Structures are given as structure tokens and as C-alpha cells.
Image 1: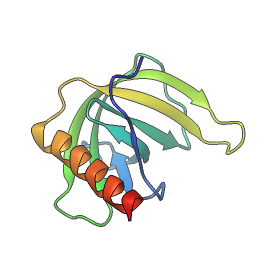
Image 2: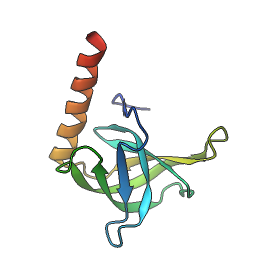
Image 3: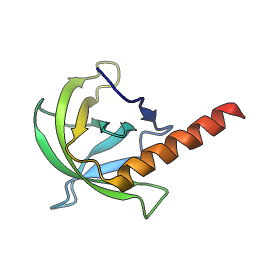
Image 4: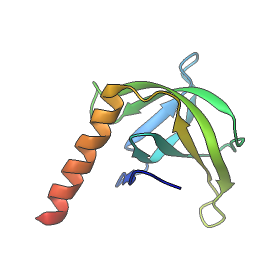
Length: 113
């Protein structure tokens, strides 16, 4: 059961995750919360798989995060043909948590206007 609401990105290409060792693209971030994220990819994921990843926001050069995560669920979206997976962060950094809260606040302000 989810404890925190997710912050969805307007564009799937707003944030990407890559392998920190070789820079290979893992996928794009569909949504985030303080404790995890959903990744959309061309390649399948394995449930309970442990991944080290580097997340970078497209528009904000300073918004880069090294993440240590475990795959909680994985599926193929039959409508899009992309693979999707939910990851739980092992130890979210304070800067990652702050970024999610800032995104949520910005989204809330846009919705009230």
C-alpha cells in the first residue's frame, strides 16, 4: 500500500535514469514520491532486482541523484508496448526528498490557478 502520493511528470522525458557505471540509459521516470519512482523503459525489469541508478532532470542541470533502489513490481503496458516498474529507494537522500516536495508544491500551485 502506498504511503505517499506520487508526483507525475507532464512529459515522460522530463527525467531519465541511467547506469552510473557506463552511462547507458535505463529508462525514463514516469512519477516519483519521497520513497520511490516508476520507470518506463524499452527493456523489461525483474521484480526484486536491486539497481544502482543515476537520475537526471532534463531542465535542471543541478538536479542529479544517485539512487539505490529495489524493484517492487514490473509489468509490460500492453497499450504502449513499454515496460514499467516501480522501485523503492533504499535510502532516499535529503536532496531527492526535497526535490519531490518542491515538485508537488509547484504542481499544487499550478492546479489552484
